[in-house]
Image (cartoon, rainbow, N blue to C red; front, top):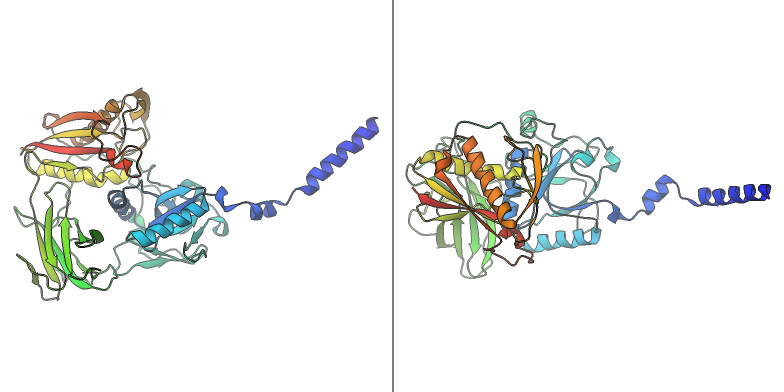
Length: 448
C-alpha cells in the first residue's frame, strides 16, 4: 500500500510539473491586461514642464491628469488614464486624438515611476500607436525649450536629446534622481520668506520662430500688467466662435502660429484668463485681424495686446490649477505654480484681503488625510496624520492648507478668511464625468 501511494504521488507531481509551461511561455501567454496601460498625452525631460502641462490638462480636459517617470526613456510621462483594460486604453487614446488638441496621444503598456526604475530595456514597456496598434520606436518630447518637438529614442537607445543643464533641472524639488519622483512623491520645497516672481521684464532680444509646429498665421499675444506694462506669464485660448470649439491654447509673449478656423466667416475669440487677473477677451476676424491696439510688427507677427488688471473687491476666481490628493487636505505638486501666483498677488498689494472658499464633490463623510503638526509638507503625502470627518471639514482643511502655505511665506494670517461649503455648491452632478470640477478652492477679494 505504501509503495502504491508513493508511485501515485510521484505520478501526480510529474503531471503537475511537466504540464506547467516555462516562465517564458507563461509570460507570452499572459494577457496584456495584467500590466497597467497608460493613456499618455505628453512626455517631458524637464520636471517643471511636466508640472505645468499636467496642470493645464486638468483645467482643459477636466480629468485627473498625472505624471510619472519612465526611467527607461528618462522622460516624465503625463497620462490621463491608468487601466488594466488594454482595449479601453486604446479607445480613450483614439477619442483624445479625434476630439482634443492632443492629437498624438498614445498608449504606454508597462511600468512607470518606481516600478520602472532599474528594469532592463527589453522588459520596461512598450509605447503603442492606438491607430496602428503597433509599437512606437520613439515618442515626441513636448518640452518648449527647443524650437521643435524632439523625439526620445526607443528603449535601449541613447538618452533623449537635451543638455546636461536641462537634465539637472528635471530633478524633483527635493533633488532626487529623475528616475525616482512621481506626481505624488515630489516633496515640498523649502519654505521661502520672500515672494516668488513670475513676471519678467520686456525682452530685448529678437523673437524666436514659432515653436508650436502648426500651419497658420503668426500671432504674438502680448500679456502685460496694465498698471506698469510688465510682462505676465500666461496663455491665450483661441476659440472658433461659430463652432463654439477651442482651436488651441498658445503661450503669451512669444511668437506662435494659430491654425485657420474651420468656420466660413473666420470669426474667433482670443481669451486670456491668467490667475490673479480679470478675464480679457478679444473678438476678431482671423482673415483680417483688426481692433484696438492690434498691429503687425517688424517680424510680420500680428500683435494682440492683453492689458491685464488685477482682481478687484467682489471678484471671485477659481483656482483651477490647484489639486488635492484623494481624501487629503494636501496639495498635489502641480498646484505649486498657482498658489505661488496667489502669493505674488498678495505681496504685490499689501491691502488685499481674501476669503478662501473650500468645496468638495458630494457631502459624504470619510477619511481625511492632513499634515502632521508643524509639518511644512504642503505638496507631499509624507509626514501626515489620518482622521475622519465630514465633507465640510475636508473642504475647510483644504482651504486652510492654502492659507498655511501663504502664511509660511510671509502673509499675515489676518488677511485671509476661510469659508467651508462641503458639497453644497457643486458645479457639476457629483456622479458625472466632470465631477472633479466640484473639488475646488475659490478666492474672493474682500478688500483691495
